Amino acid sequence: DAGVIQSPRHEVTEMGQEVTLRCKPISGHNSLFWYRQTMMRGLELLIYFNNNVPIDDSGMPEDRFSAKMPNASFSTLKIQPSEPRDSAVYFCASSLVGRAGELFFGEGSRLTVL
Amino acid sequence: TQLLEQSPQFLSIQEGENLTVYCNSSSVFSSLQWYRQEPGEGPVLLVTVVTGGEVKKLKRLTFQFGDARKDSSLHITAAQPGDTGLYLCAGEQTSGSRLTFGEGTQLTVNP
Image (cartoon, rainbow over all chains, first blue to last red; front, side, top):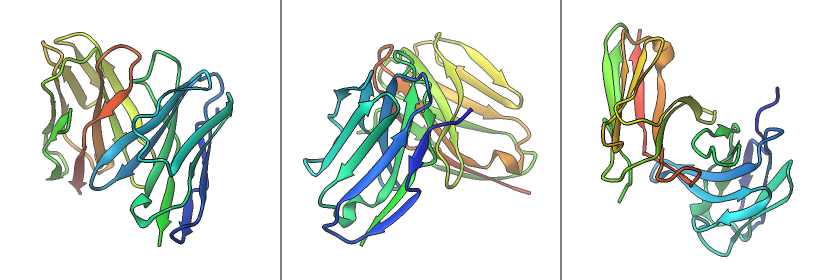
């Protein structure tokens, strides 16, 4: 069975450019989470959706970040404009609603903003 | 302030040794999870504990949830190089709520 699929795996961009990260959750999972991982701050929850509806976006750093989930099989995380401090590994994870502790993570998207 | 404190942050041991990693908090959790993450990959769930005092075993790994559901430990017996990785504890304060991760323990097992 396919796991959570993220793209791109690596992205290098220049400050000010728009970045779009993509995620396909596991089929049948109805909760989707976006996390950011850095050495300094560890794993931070940015936003999560239940049944395609954003539930908690309090972790989104600022207005430059936005996330959408237009259907049950696709989500995007967009950063516009990007800044060097956004450099991190961004993970998407999915689970069943009510089973937020049992997350299945993708392999991550490593973003470097120069 | 980190909700979940893990210790130690780094641990380097020789193959065959035993080790314990701790996850502590002042908050009560409805459930607590342990994940392992290898370089270039996402975290992978190892275990979930939900009952105070619960002990779960996964081959050479033993997980314990504190009686008050505020802390947990992971004990590895006879560590092997394949155990090398970042071990993360995570907790739900109420069932179905957002998961909070600790900062992790980076374990290196040398052959």
